[in-house]
Length: 235
Image 1 (cartoon, rainbow, N blue to C red):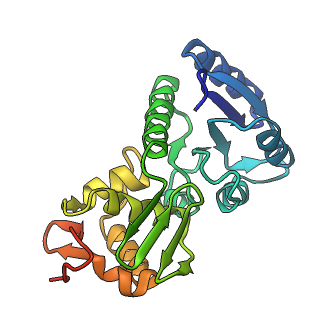
Image 2 (cartoon, rainbow, N blue to C red; image 1 turned 90 degrees about the horizontal axis):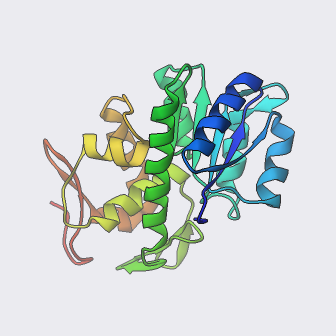
């Protein structure tokens, strides 16, 4: 992260953009803004931001498609994205996090809360960058920088959210993680989603990891735990 964090604001509401720019600059951020989907990728490539505030409803395209494009490109997938939208239904939040968004803010929102959320996500991203880049655990190998996972040498294709869920469990191996903890730390701040969402994603992650999926243990009535060693059998 740069000394003065750079935030790219993607929104076509001029008054809201001015409000966000003023408050973010007062809080110590450098800001740029674009109002059209077609300008986003060029803006990111010309001067990579530390975080993107992304409105989902743009005049020439979908913020959802932009988020998918950013998170599927190895050059930009590590840039945190906060979705900003007037649509606050649970299904919209779930779809956003499925695509790899780091947080989800519903309009109208408190600018002060937005600043706090941005700072929290940048702290989390900074912590993740100082962790070991390539981790091997038995049959599983994880390359954080490239956001890639391998089982027995073969690459496993994971969504951004699945990758974050896997690395969160791996980083906390042998420590039980409740469903509420995983919802908070993997899906985002103050997200209200039913806990069965976690179970669904754990099941899908295990299936994709194949033999390495056995490293994720179920702790009945509590949550999940990553094995303490590759030789520990699931119970």
